[in-house]
Length: 473
Image 1 (spheres, rainbow, N blue to C red):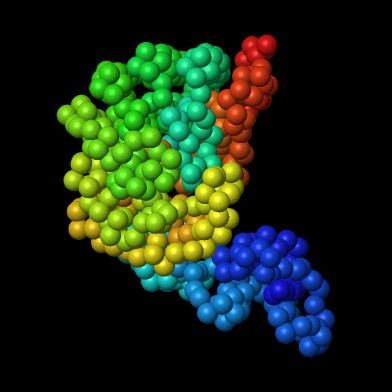
Image 2 (image 1 turned 90 degrees about the vertical axis):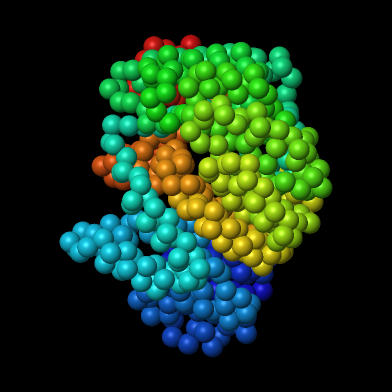
């Protein structure tokens, strides 16, 4: 076992996360210590002492540890020493620091690139990607208005559960769905009553899951009309997204209902266009049903159709992935999110092979490289990015769009400078405090049955965070 003794630190978390990109949990320990002269000579061959004189900053220590891990394993990480979810948020912080010096935008971008590469050891490829996303947002997205928020509404149901899924998604009966919807409508009404007193407004609405189009047309109509009414939103006035995710839940009647309700963005999420992989994942549809979902949607008038694909799915090679991408482009998706497979706790794939995410990282990396070339050539640009734990190859998820077809909600979630009101089972809200540039999470329970059982408690918590209202009992 490798032991990394780090002098002068109190918390080993960030250093452990970095080591975990290179080594399995059982292969290393990170140990905070107070070093003394000659300490290194007393330790075993696989032990290292870092920051011996106690003078280094956290990022300097991480660079020192990175060099040791690179030497031990003979490998590098595409994102260098970065272990967080939001690399763009950090790039914006650096950019804003440079901007405060009164230099030009071009100089700010050059300095941001230099610092991100030098301080965090990003590979040239990831540095190019990050700077392109930063440039897109500077050119196309205004900073959030302090008086605006976003609304997320969770529908925790799916037709089947995919092998990689660890989200709050359940296979449920129509009776269960209807009971859940009844409680959700009460939460929407309750929160809307509080919100109406705050003299604020919503900038975007996102209905996610699960698969929201598990609901039937009448249920979707009740839900969306309740959102409009409770939050005083004129239909069609703000970005409004519904994840239609699973193609096997998309019907002409549902698409007509969504357009009649002035929803402007939907997601059709194949993840792959290869039938064998769809079967392996536990999806209850084939690629032809994906194509049919696009045909149903064609000409309906949505501003943007988003599609998700996953790089690194079991048994797929680079050509499988790029063929799926070409098909989705040809089907007309204006917005495509390319995920790298993340093998999360609670997923069936992790139970089958806990170390799957450590395998085939080179293949997933090549999928992203080839996919990027295809998307750039087809006129798409990367506009937002995030990373996850247990992600193959230490890679990333990137949203691509034809210019102007970005998701404002996705951008706001990643920049973390706006309150997100989150309603429903599994929904995680965030209250933003601009005076300290910080967030506080407000999580609803993930299980839809427990959501109903603890409903009065959920409403009380909304009261505590968002203002005074009548007793939730």
